[in-house]
Structure formats: C-alpha cells, structure tokens
Length: 411
Image (cartoon, rainbow, N blue to C red; front, side, top):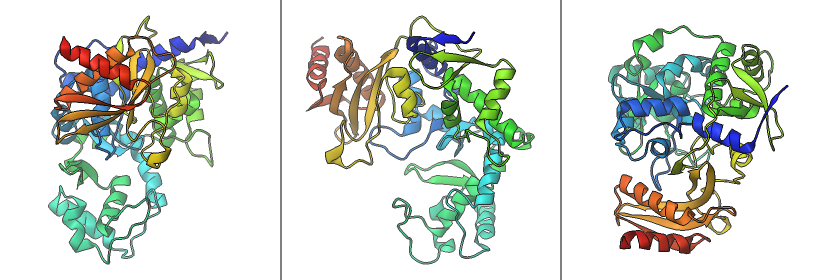
C-alpha cells in the first residue's frame, strides 16, 4: 500500500533535504559550503543586486553569516569546485555535473543556442573562439570593438548585446567556452573549458541523454526529499514527458522507482502523485530562522511552495510599482518549518542601512514572528556590512517589527 505523508511531514522532509537541519559550523568553511551545495545542487545566478546577488543568498540562509570570498574561491580558483552553466537557469553547479550537461550542449548546438542565434558573418564564431584561446580569460567587452559590426540593438527584453557577446553566449551554451568568473561589475569572464574545469571532469565519459537525465532526476530527488514528477523535472529544467525519442523525467522516475531509490507516496492535499527519496530524513522538528531569496530552491517552483507551505508567492520585479502587492524584492521569512512572513528589502549601501520597505505577516503567523524577524534582520544587516535596520509603514507587520527592533536596541 502507498504510504501517505502529512503536509507537515512533507514540509520537514523538504527542508531537511535542503540542509536546514544540518548542524551549523561555528565559522562556515569551504567544507560547510560544499556540504550546503550538495544539498541545493545548484545556486541560481541573477544580476539583481538590490540586497545581495542571488547566488550568495541560499548559502547565507543555510550557513548563516559567512565570508563571501568562499564562494568566489569555489567558483574562480583552483581547485575549482563550482562552474556556471544553464543547469536550472543560469546557475553555479558542482563541476562534476559538466558531463551531465553535454546532452543539453548538444541540443543547443542543434538549435543554435537558446534563441536560434546565427551570426551574419559565418566565420565569426571561429574567430571569436580563436581569440579566447589566444587571449583568455576575456570579457565580451574585451572583444567588442574587434568583432562587433554595426550599432547594438535593444531586442529580447532590452538586452543590448554586441555581436561578440552573442557569439560568446552561444559558445558557452554549446560548451566550447566556459565561464571562468565574473568581474566586480558582474561581467562574465570566458575562457576555454580546459583552462577552467579540472582535467578529470573534462575526461569523464559522456552519458547517454537518458542516463544524464536519470542522474539529474536522482540529484533533484535528493535535493527535494519528496516531490512530484513535475517538481523533479523543474529542478534541472528537464523534459517531463517522452517526445520523439528524447530523454525524459518520466522515464527516469520509472527507472528510479523500479530500482527502489524513489518510493511512490501520497502527500495530503497534493493532487499529483509524489515520490520520496529512500534516503530522505523525516525530522521531528526544524529549527530554522532565516530569510530566503526569491531564487532559493525552496520557493523557486511557486506551485511547490504553495503546496508545501500554503504560501502564495510571486516575484514582482517586473510588475509596475502601482500594481505590486508586496514590493519589488520580497523575501519569505522561514521560522521553524513554516513561511510566516515576507519582507520587501533593499540594502542602502551608501547610508549603511537595511531598508525594510514593507513587512507582511501570514494569516497564521505565530506571536513571536516580529521578534524573531527583528533578530534575523539584524543578523542579515551585519552580514551585509550595514549598521542599522529601518522599517517603513507598509504591511501589517511593519508596526510590530519596528517595536521589536526598538526593544532590541534598548536591551
């Protein structure tokens, strides 16, 4: 008979799988970072810097305040542990995943990248690749004048990419170049894969497309703990159903169920069948108290967040200001095993202040929410190098939060 999990059990399983029950290290180290990334699998990269870059935040949420140079070392110095690729969307992933992405690279080569890019000059790709080989590591700006013709355009969501940048992006997607790091202005730095990735990773055998998908589904199941097939497919942006002989999540799930690694379960309130990883832990409690980035794996699949936490969440960056419900850059607040509030945050770096533009408690938020959130905001501000926290008037939690911060100062 298929086991049935309560929503509370599923929630705790999911949080444990994401590392929220790991014993904290007094001072987070590279070992802490590697353990954390083994839980999350990937760290989504995004350019928005209203508070902190997206890839730094999931580590903070699980490790607490840490030296961000740990992540830069892991991604940019030897022995390189992480590398950027289109693993979820643009994301940092363990270097060991590179061979599992070769089927995706081959697909992008056949499709001419994600947007069907074809250079007007058929020899441009070869010349740009030769320039990277000769001069790398390089940015698109380094090659722009030499390899771009005509004015930049403002197509595709306002991107203002030069020809050199478009070619480099294509070469990156197909695996002919790799990302060696980013500049202080967040510009991508490109180089040849053999100068970026460890030799043993590049020499690793290439799995078949279905072998790669099955391994990625296995990794997604470990990171989720319990999940529907749709959630498993979304984690590494895989095809759910078989189509024209291509690899699929459904085939992978069937294989992993047959081997006993995934156990079919029901979760109360879920409409879709679910799958429990055989190594998933079911903790009696989760003692978390932290803020989650909008790009955190716990909440990036919004339907899953709602099914697990009864938390309806949408990022409103692209919504006109007058139509936003909660704000521009809103972070869920995780307390214990529940999402109990959300706050619209901005780091005022010039004024050295963490601005809380709005604070909103969920309907069933516990009485201690304001006090706990105040403590977390102080901790976050300290990690960001900010001296104070100020709270605006928007939201039903703003008043209690202001009082809680004031009482903390009096103590």
